[in-house]
Every structure is written in structure tokens, then in C-alpha cells.
Image 1 (spheres, helix red, strand yellow):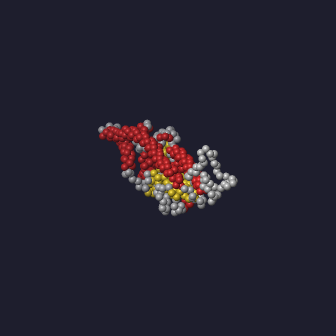
Image 2 (image 1 turned 180 degrees about the horizontal axis):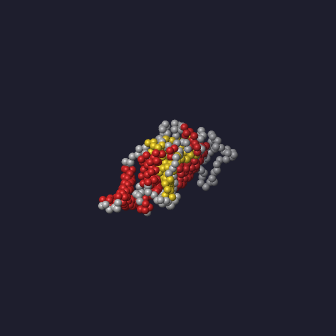
Image 3 (image 1 turned 45 degrees about the vertical axis):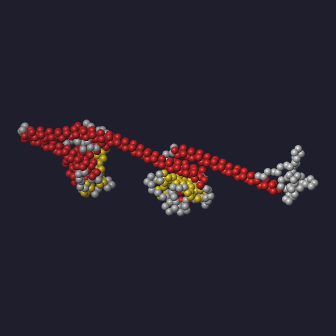
Length: 490
């Protein structure tokens, strides 16, 4: 800036002011072309001064505006950092993907002014991205916006790991619903972790908005959300593994208890079976020895000894057959031959055997009438006869007084056979156990009444192999029992 000319006045003289155009003979220094006044600034010098003042004022105004913009930007950046810190605290305490998506949606709407938005997350099987939350659309609309994986936009030239405006080729079909007005465009925000696109957001932003100004904030937000989704997956997987481990631990404990019970049953079964096998064998040897040594009074006495020996042999054979049948079942070598067969003929064959079984004098065996009207059943006649005789033998053995009744009923596509007794019954908690191996050896009944405890187990397997069922019901101790068989009609 040029300095004003110095005052040429003599020392000690009073200072001279600017020329007064009103004085006689004075000239106006602001009028172009006016003669210069000695000691006064020229017109050009005053113009330079004014121009420099105007320039300085403009610079000050620009600097003030720049400062205001910097201050606003700093305030906005401070606010965004505060929001990001708050979001990070929420995401750190959020173990569920849906909650992460909900927090993210609020940030996009409140901080970035999204008119509409949606957040997609990769499903467990990795075949699709499913929308978790949506804004600006009805729930029925955004829940239908499932997109394929690993590339949600297979027909669009888009780099999936970069935030950018969506290409028009990607905005088609259901995604067009996100363009809630003509003045918005769709912006893509991916969430990537370890080169895996774990999810993304699509925002409906005003077309003129410069997203580059918010790119740093978006980058930080992307990292936070990617880590949160990844941690949510890990948390869920750990939870599932923990639940699986807990369930397996419980199952293992149950299996250990069952194994201990089975081992106890087996030990008692072996002890009981040894006793059961020894008893008829001892009878056979004893009676045979008596006959060989001729220690009988007459032929009738000898015949009774032989009959007792024969009965002991049949009992021993029955016990051995049970053990052999169970071994065949467990090894898969038990065969059944299913074909249509008359239940009437089968029941007529079973009846004399049942009537010959030993029973208390006070026990009555009741047999059904009108069996000739029954249809043919799909069964193995020999195996069904074995099952019926086993059930009748048990009922007669465990009934001290009352009756053992056989009922036959025709149902829808099947025939139901019931063996009902008034015997000792069984507690409700022990009823299912009777179909387990060796379980009769548990209580004192087996020692009182005999048997191996394998009969019902073999019956259950045989009925299942013939496509039928067997069930037991009892109202409790001393309340009798009902065993029910079902078989399909041929």
C-alpha cells in the first residue's frame, strides 16, 4: 500500500488540513484533471487506497466465511465422532444381528438423512442376503427384498467392497421400491470382514448430496458394523456350541445312568438265568436218576417222574429259546415271513395251548366268541402265535385270582387283540421298562414267579417286524394289566 505524501510545511508552522474547495482559488483534488495542490494526495493515490481497502475487506469476508465453514465442519465432525462412539458402545453390547441392523438404520436416517434404507445380512447357509430392517417402506415390502449371495447384484458392474452410488442396472425389480421419490438415488454401503461380504445397506439419499464429505465417517461405521456382525455370528455359534455341549453332556449322563442300569440288570439276569436254567435241569437229572435206579413204587409213580422230567425239559427249552431268539434279534438274523392269514384259525390253534398252561384254581381263562367273522391279517402265523402264547403265559403266571380275558376288536384297517388280567399289575413308572432287556430281573417278582425277563422284549421286536405294535397299561400295583396288540388287515 502506498504511503501518503508528507506535509511540506515548515517546522513550527501549524499543520495544514486538506484543501477546502470552498476557499477562493482552491482546487478539488477529487476531481479528475484538477491541478495538483502542493502537499496533497493525487486522485490516483486515493483510488489505490480505496481499492486496497475493498480488497482487504473482501479477504476478511472470505476468511470469515472459510472460518465459519471450518467451524461448522469441525462441529459436524465432532458430532459424528460422538455418534460413532455412542454407536460403538451400543454395538459392543449387542449380540444379535437384528439389533445391530436396527442401530445402523437409525444412524442412516438421523445422521445421513436417508429417505429410505434397508440393511441386509448374509444368511447362515450363505445362499442369500436377507433384509433385517427397513425404513421408508411397509414391512410387507422390505421383507420381500431377499438378494442372492455371494453377489447380490449379478447383472450390475459394481465392486461389492466399496461404498458407491448404485448402478442403474442394479436398481431393478424389488429394489425399485427403495426409490421413494424422483429426487433420490440409491447408495451402497458394504460390510466386509476377511474378504467376505457379510452384509450391506442401501440408502435412498437426495441426488445432489455429496457423500464424499461423509466418506471417512462411513468407513469407520463400516468397520464397526462389520466387526459387530462377525462378533454376533461368533457369539451365536458359541452359544449353539455351548447348548449342544450342554445337551450332549445331559445325554451322556443319561446314557451313563442307562448303562449302569443295564449292567446291573444284566448281572442280575445272568444270576437269575443261571438259577432258572439250573432248576429244570436239576429236575430232569433227578427224576431220570430215580427212574434209572428204579426208585419208584409202581409204574404210575415212574410215569409221574417221567412226566415231571418232560415238563422240566420243556421249561428249560423255553428258557433257551428266549435267549436264542434275543441273540438272533440283536444280530439281525431273526426272520419273519409275512402273508395274509386267518386270525380265526390262529386263535383256534392258540386256545388249547393256553388252556393247558398252569394257573391257580381261582383264575378263569375267558375266550372270545364269533371269531369266524374276523378278516385275514398281514402276519407271520408262527411268530404271532409265539407272541400270543407268551402274553397268555405271563398273564396266567402273574394272576393269583380273578381272570385272564382275551378280546378281539376290529378297527380302521387293523385288528386289535387285548390280553386283560386281574393280576399283580405294575407301577406306572415301571411299565415302559418291561420292554427293555433283562428288566424283570430287577424286582422280587422274577424270583417269585420265575422267568428271564426277555419275553416282552422279544414280543415287541416280533410285532415291529410284522408291522404291528404292542403296548402295556396298568393302573398300578394289584390293579391288573392290559397288553394290546395291533396288526394290519390284509
